[in-house]
Image (cartoon, rainbow, N blue to C red; front, top):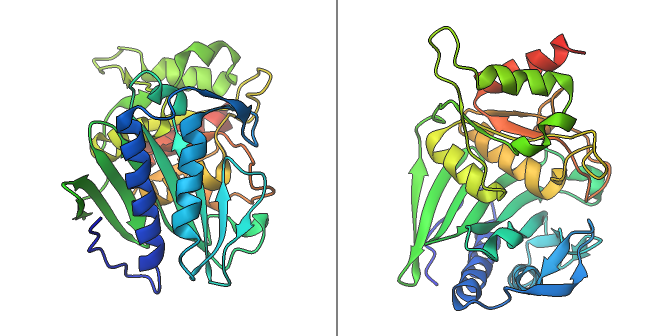
Length: 304
């Protein structure tokens, strides 16, 4: 691997090196077709694992544990945070997002966030995160992330990473990424918001609806084209607060999109302002451009 990236943040280069090396290993396994069958285990949230979930988790732990500035590692696949050194930074991960999608060839990926001075669950809030983003395991190995207030995208090819700074603001598009089959059990306010968004009235073109059922794939499209990503809670057993985890899915993605000039909410407040009660806490997630987030919150207040 060749990674020439130099972080603007102190002593972060080793952590990035570990993240990128692990992503390369996971992508190589995926391209070989390794690990693409269900394991006999489930993760801390009760989700069924495929063998590649375990491979990915171990890959990140192996590389990150070698850096003396990485203090704790938190993973979707493990019940507790694991101490690896006395360094100042902690990394939280979804090591393989969209694993079931990978089984049928839809791009999967990994989500990561880096926090400073995080000693327990409550410290992994949006005020402490300093880096966040995701890898995409698709036709190519790609990365999209924010290093502090600077945003980058990149691709791995011929043994080397090429990273590009992203200085343009977040694009805007009338695209809604949401699982429409659950609409009957959404809150009334969200049903109305979506219904109004997809109506072709008064000469307005309705929103396009796109849904990969893979957060990294939906967020890649929003990063490049704009729109609104939504994974709400629902009046259905197991979905009351959605299925996405606050610490290692919602906050890192929100941090990246905020750095591009976008916004996020759980319906009431920014995801970056939410208190964290436990490492595997679930939360309704809405991420997109500021106007769409503001409109969404206005609908919820209207129907409160």
